Image (cartoon, rainbow, N blue to C red; front, top):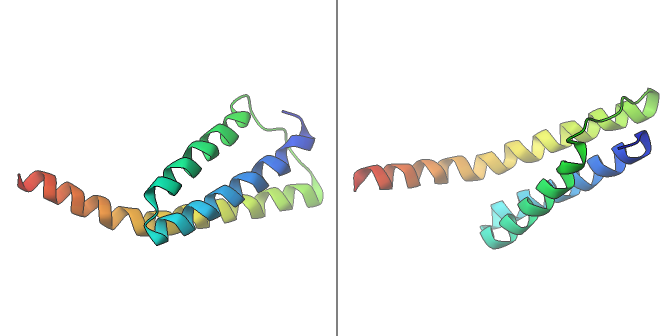
Length: 93
Protein backbone atom coordinates (compact mmCIF):
# COMPACT_ATOMS: atom_id res chain seq x y z
CA UNK A 1 0.00 0.00 0.00
CA UNK A 2 1.31 3.42 -0.90
CA UNK A 3 0.47 6.72 0.73
CA UNK A 4 -1.76 7.46 -2.30
CA UNK A 5 -3.87 4.40 -1.46
CA UNK A 6 -4.55 5.25 2.19
CA UNK A 7 -7.29 7.89 1.94
CA UNK A 8 -9.25 6.12 -0.82
CA UNK A 9 -9.24 2.95 1.29
CA UNK A 10 -10.53 4.78 4.38
CA UNK A 11 -13.11 6.68 2.32
CA UNK A 12 -14.34 3.42 0.82
CA UNK A 13 -14.54 1.81 4.28
CA UNK A 14 -16.38 4.81 5.70
CA UNK A 15 -18.92 4.56 2.88
CA UNK A 16 -19.38 0.82 3.38
CA UNK A 17 -19.79 1.12 7.14
CA UNK A 18 -22.28 3.95 6.62
CA UNK A 19 -24.29 1.62 4.39
CA UNK A 20 -23.92 -1.14 7.00
CA UNK A 21 -25.30 1.21 9.66
CA UNK A 22 -28.31 1.97 7.46
CA UNK A 23 -28.86 -1.73 6.74
CA UNK A 24 -28.65 -2.62 10.44
CA UNK A 25 -31.09 0.12 11.40
CA UNK A 26 -33.50 -1.15 8.72
CA UNK A 27 -33.08 -4.77 9.81
CA UNK A 28 -31.68 -5.70 6.39
CA UNK A 29 -29.36 -8.44 7.61
CA UNK A 30 -28.75 -9.91 4.15
CA UNK A 31 -27.59 -6.54 2.89
CA UNK A 32 -25.63 -5.97 6.07
CA UNK A 33 -23.81 -9.27 5.65
CA UNK A 34 -22.90 -8.52 2.03
CA UNK A 35 -21.56 -5.11 3.00
CA UNK A 36 -19.62 -6.64 5.87
CA UNK A 37 -17.86 -9.00 3.47
CA UNK A 38 -17.02 -6.07 1.18
CA UNK A 39 -15.66 -4.09 4.13
CA UNK A 40 -13.53 -7.03 5.25
CA UNK A 41 -12.04 -7.34 1.78
CA UNK A 42 -11.40 -3.59 1.57
CA UNK A 43 -9.77 -3.53 5.01
CA UNK A 44 -7.54 -6.42 3.95
CA UNK A 45 -5.48 -3.92 1.97
CA UNK A 46 -4.10 -2.61 5.26
CA UNK A 47 -2.78 -5.96 6.50
CA UNK A 48 0.79 -5.05 5.59
CA UNK A 49 0.48 -1.71 7.36
CA UNK A 50 -0.59 1.77 6.37
CA UNK A 51 1.97 4.45 5.50
CA UNK A 52 2.04 7.53 7.70
CA UNK A 53 0.48 10.69 6.31
CA UNK A 54 1.26 14.34 7.04
CA UNK A 55 -0.69 17.56 7.23
CA UNK A 56 -4.15 17.73 5.71
CA UNK A 57 -4.02 14.11 4.57
CA UNK A 58 -3.31 12.99 8.13
CA UNK A 59 -6.23 15.04 9.43
CA UNK A 60 -8.52 13.58 6.76
CA UNK A 61 -7.43 10.08 7.81
CA UNK A 62 -8.24 10.91 11.44
CA UNK A 63 -11.66 12.26 10.44
CA UNK A 64 -12.40 9.10 8.45
CA UNK A 65 -11.36 6.89 11.36
CA UNK A 66 -13.70 8.86 13.62
CA UNK A 67 -16.48 8.31 11.08
CA UNK A 68 -15.72 4.58 11.01
CA UNK A 69 -15.89 4.47 14.79
CA UNK A 70 -19.20 6.37 14.85
CA UNK A 71 -20.65 3.95 12.29
CA UNK A 72 -19.42 1.03 14.36
CA UNK A 73 -21.01 2.49 17.49
CA UNK A 74 -24.34 2.97 15.68
CA UNK A 75 -24.22 -0.62 14.38
CA UNK A 76 -23.51 -1.93 17.88
CA UNK A 77 -26.47 0.06 19.25
CA UNK A 78 -28.66 -2.02 16.95
CA UNK A 79 -26.94 -5.40 17.19
CA UNK A 80 -25.95 -5.66 20.86
CA UNK A 81 -29.49 -5.61 22.30
CA UNK A 82 -30.54 -8.13 19.66
CA UNK A 83 -27.57 -10.37 20.46
CA UNK A 84 -28.44 -10.17 24.16
CA UNK A 85 -32.00 -11.27 23.43
CA UNK A 86 -30.71 -14.14 21.32
CA UNK A 87 -28.31 -15.20 24.07
CA UNK A 88 -31.06 -15.15 26.69
CA UNK A 89 -33.36 -17.15 24.42
CA UNK A 90 -30.69 -19.79 23.81
CA UNK A 91 -29.85 -20.04 27.51
CA UNK A 92 -33.53 -20.49 28.41
CA UNK A 93 -33.76 -23.69 26.37
